[in-house]
Every structure is written in C-alpha cells, then in structure tokens.
Length: 338
Ligand code: NAD
Ligand code: UDP
Image (cartoon, rainbow, N blue to C red; front, side, top):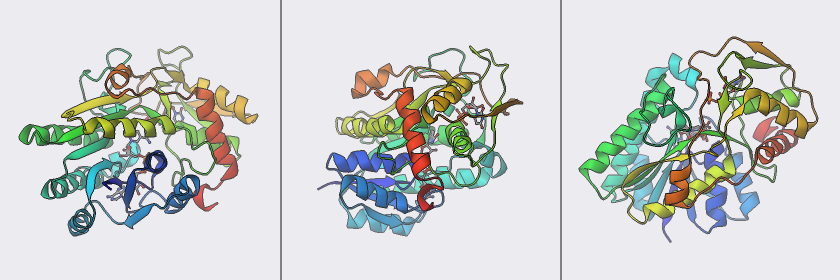
C-alpha cells in the first residue's frame, strides 16, 4: 500500500492528522526530530486508533536519512508539518527559522523529486496575508510578512510555486491555517507547548487549571466589537480532516493551489475567555496590557474555496473547541509527561 510521509507528525496538528489518516486506513510514516514534541503523542495516536504508527526520529534537513526513507518506502505523498512556529522566537533567531523551515523544505522537495514523489501538502498559515485590507480573507488577497516566521512560510510558498512552474507534474496543496485550537475529544491528545505558551488558548487553559495566575489580554483598543483582537479559531480535528481532503485532491492533479482552512467566523479574546469560563466553570482572571507588537486587529477566512474544491467544511463549534481543550488540560495538566 502507498505510504503517506508525515513530517512533524508528532506535533500538535500532525498527531491529530495521523489519527484521521489511520482511521481512514492510510498507511502513515512519521518523521519528526521531536524538537517541539514528545513521542508519547504517537503512543496516544495508537491508543485512539488501535493501529501501529511507524515513527522515525530524525530531521528533514538530514539528506541521507531522507534518501533512505524514500528508498525503503513506497511513499506517494508527503504531508509537511515540520517547522518552527513561534513568531517571537523567529524575531530573535531568524537564521534558525530560515534554516529549519526553508532549507528543510528544500531538502525534502529535492529528495521527493529524486524519488519521483511529487504530491505535497504544505502547512502554511494565515500569517501570509499580513494585515489584510478587508475581511473575510480570500486566497487571492495580497501576501506579505511581518516577521521571520511568516516570511519563511511566504518564501516556501513562492519556492513551491517555482517548483511547479519548472515541473508541472507536481501537485501541491498550500493549506493556510487560521487559528488551530481544540484537542482530540478523547482527552488523550492536545497541544502541549514547551515553556510559556505564546498562543491564546494554551494561556487561557493554563490559567483555568491554576498553572498561571492571570491572562494578559494584549490590547482592548482595536477597532473590533469589544476592542480585543479577533481571530478565526478552528478545531484541530476539522483542520486534520482538511488534510485528508487535500491529499485526495492531489490525486486529481490539482497543480499548485492555496486553500484557507478556517471556520469563517471571528471571535474576540474576550469571547474566548467567556466561552472557557462557561465550559470549565473556572474564573479566568485577566488584565489588559499593551498590544503585542506585530498583532493585527482582526483576521478571519472566507473558506468557500476549500468547500467548493475540496468538499471540506469545519463542523465543530466554539463550544466543542473549548470543551475539548478543557478535557485535555484537566486530564493532562502537565501535558504528555504529566
Ligand atoms: P508543532 O511544533 O506542534 O509541530 C511541528 C513538529 O515539527 C514538531 O513535532 C517538531 O518537533 C517537528 N519539527 C520541527 N522542525 C523539524 C525538523 N527540522 N525535522 C523534523 N521535525 C521537525 O506545531 P503545529 O502547531 O503542529 O504546527 C504544524 C505546522 O503548521 C507548522 O509548520 C506550523 O508552522 C504550521 N502552522 C501552525 C499553526 C498553529 O497555530 N499551530 C498555524 C499556522 C500554521
Ligand atoms: N492574545 C492575548 N493574550 C495572550 C495570547 C494571545 O490577548 O496571552 C491575543 C492576541 O493578541 C490575538 C489573539 O489572542 O489577538 C490570538 O493570538 P494567538 O497568538 O493565539 O494567535 P495569532 O496572533 O497568531 O493569530
């Protein structure tokens, strides 16, 4: 059977995607260097699916390892999650981000080409839209970047477009994720950030469980309904399902295309706080502090291209997202090794 190589498959979105793939009978092989994840996430995938996950601990920049993997497995498609993703860290360590994300992707694509594998699903981000002039965002909006992380995604998208221009046998899905949140409904898998989390949801859930005293709300003077930042939060399971639809679309020779994966609805920081308080029955004390540099007021998707082309829609509600995070956080207060 054809194998799907999942780079970064031990991470947050990758591990949830492994579950959806395994449950649909795909043969999955994970390559991850565990720089931002634990192999335990894959044990949990096995626990949920009852199947075996093949895992190779290694780096996408390791050319000889990649060559060996492609020679030893009948890989038909690569779903490429591996990358560094912390915006603030990327400002401090730009070269590390370009090296890992951009060089790593080039090495991966070279090895794919050498082995005649030209089907790729790439984890892009809504960050490539920069500060959008209007909302909702469609895929044809102008692209820009405000930090090295975002620029690494933008550069990779451009490299992949050049690759397709040079060899039209490539089929490439650029999946532009909006704000992934949520956890597996079993409570066995979820987001397990290293150190102090950057993203809103892990911060909120850590306050609810008592690991952090207070939530910093970055600004309440944005031109939004309550002044706090608005984002399009999407359940990680819905996002994972989007990858299955994209893999199936690659098989129909889609060329290179971008798809927004979002719900299409914006929620403010305070909406999220209130939703979390309701589900967890815990108070979430917060303090309004200065805007976070580089943040934009509001961002949400027009997901109709994904609906029309991929037959994909996000099905989970905000309440599902929040209650699944709360279940994961309460059952695993210290993450995978709690
Ligand atoms: P994550 O950090 O949980 O997962 C990424 C995985 O890649 C980790 O397991 C890490 O160990 C692995 N990795 C990193 N560099 C590697 C390398 N050189 N070789 C092998 N493995 C490597 O992050 P995630 O939230 O699951 O994100 C997955 C992808 O989606 C990333 O590319 C990220 O930039 C992108 N993305 C994430 C979000 C988000 O908010 N979570 C939003 C938009 C896009
Ligand atoms: N946010 C916040 N406090 C935090 C983390 C985030 O107020 O501790 C806000 C942030 O300013 C933004 C929203 O929550 O308006 C989502 O931020 P996140 O970092 O999760 O996603 P991104 O900014 O990358 O879309």
